[in-house]
Image (cartoon, rainbow, N blue to C red; front, side, top):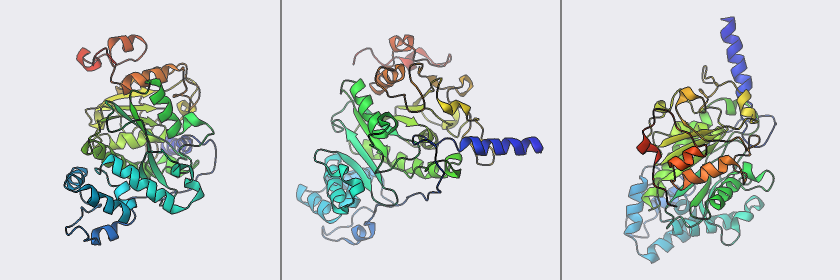
Length: 372
């Protein structure tokens, strides 16, 4: 019993270190933002089209996509003007229409935290001003891109900090920009700060509560991408974001799930994720996440290290990355491997460069063509 208590205390203390990107700070308990977008009640009551609008709380992304496909351009524009926050966050709605709606919604906030989001040319695919704010921004042409990636961040990220200039490769915007550049602009990459992340060091990062709420939002977001005509994305999940991706794995539409600097995925083995997506894991030698015990006891901790051979994920090289936020730094082996995964170029040539797969992986599972 004494050993159990020591293990539990160690797990609680150690896993509170998994703060993701902002360094050392006292933890502040967060309440997850969930549910349909702001303005949903007014949307449901709107009879301006002479027909019921899809319920944001219950309509599937496929049903949303079908609804918008029946509208004239004028009807779509009417809904954007009347309900920008709903249209902008309605998974399955046309991509260009969501950009327009969110541009309106951001400007209407008149909040200095979001001033940069209101700049011309930004492609905001989701914007939720509740709580600390949530946002998703697209880099590239999502409608025509052959390959799509989504960056899922760890702690201390919200609508005001997801593209901060300090520590750029530790933010989803910096990661997304670096990944797209590494593919020579051949992909579309989404910086998805679409869930309530933990703040600082506290109980939130040691438990899966916020990750569970985020997992549902991530699953619906990816389903909305495919319903709107975009390709199935590869997910790149950093730090606490790996917990989100682990819990969402069985529901997301994704070709690949790549975790980096992960405290765990709330799973003991790749098979426990119940996904057909390829699962990859990276951890550089200097990442302090290695000091976090990979345990899960009484809801504390996040389980097995995804880079452990026994977990069964494919290993991504990260010898040239430095620290917890260095995986997307240009010139690193990790970024080079991420770019190959993002483009679907998982070939034997990539494997020999250091991208490794479990010994039981069939050859056809790691070969998807040599061309870019």
